[in-house]
Image 1 (cartoon, each protein chain N blue to C red):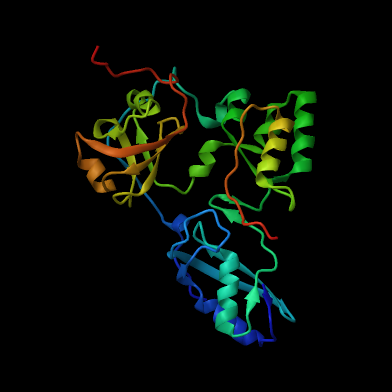
Image 2 (cartoon, rainbow over the protein chains, first blue to last red; image 1 turned 120 degrees about the horizontal axis):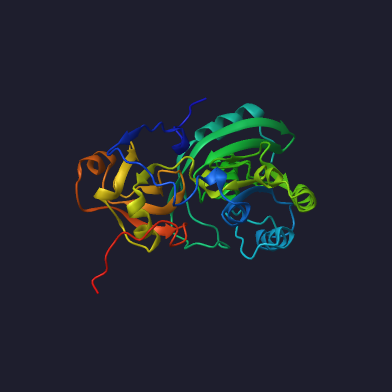
Length: 80
Length: 225
């Protein structure tokens, strides 16, 4: 079957423009973020049950994890 | 997809293959966007199986493709008419149906486990850093000194650039990262990758959405007053 090149299949090289050091005093590698920040800036790959809306599910996730803010991406049209 | 009349399997496979490639679509009556004709690319359609008038297939498509419309159009070409019967999203960029996928039960159970044990690895096993979402996007890596200006909404200028991915064209969406691998912002490139490497001054990318809070990196610019 004919395949069209998908955007995520593009191979990109990293071209370095300047040699530069980063100061360890500022910021953290994403994997070393303190757990509070990790939750604040985290993404969950959630299998949403059919039925309740994305909006409702987002509210539940917020309540379960006890976090003040949450959002969602990727919406499918409702089958109704 | 549910066909409205009997169609031989071979014909269905043939037509599905025809639908790969660019496609014109007018958003349906009940839709969230303006109803004007637009093009979307279908990267692939993988036929799986067929039972009487029910057809199962997997579509790889561009964001904003209406699958309901696709099924309807396939039905028109087949001459039988067809409708979408069921739809499941199996992938969004780097997010696929693999061990990272959790359901509501897992979520509530795992978080409860974490609360009891205070073992952070439980959380890190199902909550991923936001950087994961940018996995397939072209990146620009910037100096520490440029970060806070970007966090305040400034556009990226050439001296701030440390490294760039190849293949960026004018107007492409790009993700701006720190040298530690943290995402700073989502931007739109003003110039191509090659130009970014050559430039010594001037705007490189327009900041569109900032993800990093202000004040994490030091403020390195001077205000007029």
